[in-house]
Amino acid sequence: MVKFGLDITIWPWRYKSFDEVLRISLLAEKLGLDSLWFSDHLMYTVPGQGCLDPFSTLSAVASKTERIMLGTKVICASFRHPGVVAKMGATLDIISRGRLVLGIGAGWYKREFDAYGIPFSKRVGRMREVIEIIKKLWTEDQVNYEGRFYRLKGAVSSPKPVQKPHPPVWIAAERPHMLKIAAEIGDGWITVNSKVEDLRRRLSIIQDYASKIGREEEIDAACYMYSSLAYTSEEAWRIAERDILPERRRALNPNLSLEELGEVCLVGDPDEWISRIENYAEAGAKHIIVKIVPLDYERLKLYAEKVAGYFKEQSI
Image 1 (cartoon, rainbow, N blue to C red):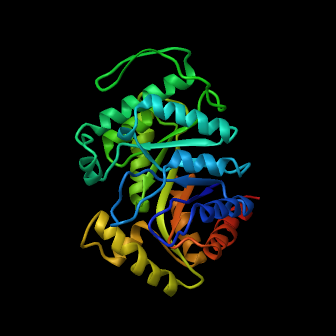
Image 2: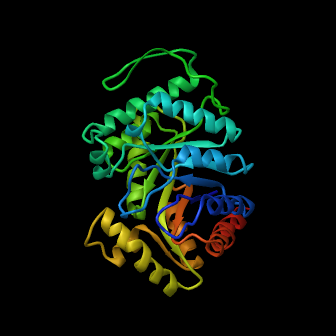
């Protein structure tokens, strides 16, 4: 059965306070959604806008919720020492009583790296070492590690996470070398704003490489998408053109068209969303994570009741 998540990151659309994020989180859990997700950026593409720290924010949400899974979508591996990530992740898993999903990636926004003096060129290699070290710190009493970027000698991280052997680590990846890393050391894989055919092709690469190296554990596939949902298709497309397209043009491609945006984002009424999600599920997606723009109570209820609710009814 497909599971449904919600991005609750504060940027850059119409949030007033953390209290609003908390109210949305509580409503998402009450409405039966499966997961909440929070992004990780030091700065972003929209001038004057930004987001809160994911670990602090999700810890606050964890203290007020009971069931819903809490994920980072995704932390940038280069922003923190792996020992710090292991400590923060274990703390969040303990506060949430075992509900953390650690989503992690190499990072993509070069201007952000340059602004903070973080090397951009070797970020994939650093990410691999960060993941390896985090898993060791979560599962071993004492860690020695000799890598290209990180060295640990007699490192101890305690207390350990609640989930055993450790919280799941989902890797955001699109290019073949990153997909192979996901196949080797990822517990799950996140693809961002992908076409259905790209999801299918990339998942096939992961599965083929996992089989080649003798890996038998299943790798969860999650599809994350910017989204516009309304009672009518016309209204959803109007919102996408007004709110999503300008930001995506700044971030990715100044020539991005509305039609191209619609190929990689969920735009439409609930029936159109259901049809699109069925295609992604058929291609192998086990989790759908949406960033609804703008996110308000009415759209959240529409998503949870009419879209996620439809799939839950079909599974009964």
